[in-house]
Image (tube, rainbow, N blue to C red):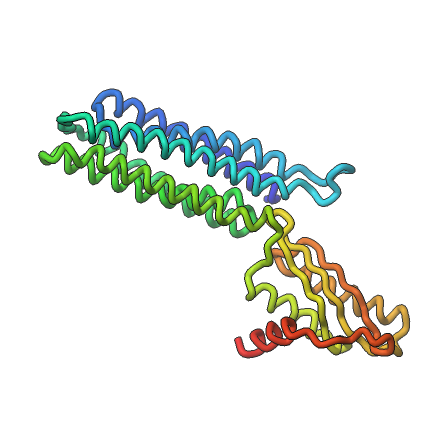
Length: 307
């Protein structure tokens, strides 16, 4: 199945799963009055809203290249992820307000409901499944939006667990645990939002990829038998993908055809890396005096050799 169909299918699964959870949690919260369950319902409502954003965003990002976007539409994905973060922070603010008001408002009615326990157990299982599913697909297809969503679902597992502990504790005679669990849920929601923003800012500002990948790029360029060295190697994010530019050093007695073949071979081996979108290679012959020392390249090549 293609990247486009795979990502769109995941977006639809997310939307349907979150919608089912918000309906179930909302119904139980109305029946029991549990703040922990209500906070989870709000969390799932935020998940449902941003699932719609993700579904629309993945539809846009998986459209094929066109005249106005010759490199495709994948660079939209970090913006989709930031929309996810906004929804996460809004949900956290609502939960913090409600749980804080309950904690400061006086006596709290105890909640004793097998339904509340059941719906939170189901939530833990569903969110665990969505976390593993989104993470696997997101990593396989290099989708920051899905990886961000996976992180959110992972933390939803913990927050649903905290809500479950609060409901059980309230049923055992400690009603204060219900709004306290809701507050823990809110803290988990905020943490998720921070993770999503942190991970996607690098895509937006064109940061360098991890050092291991940069070392692999250098090693692949230097492994060609006719490449004597490299310098001015630059790798940076363009959306979720990586563009690479570098200079390779070859002997100046090569014919134009030979230099072209060397350049093409280096481009192909670098672009064979899953994370790399495009590689731009400039050939420097010795006789023009453009060979130069590059300590960063030497360090990355050395790191790769000792790895």
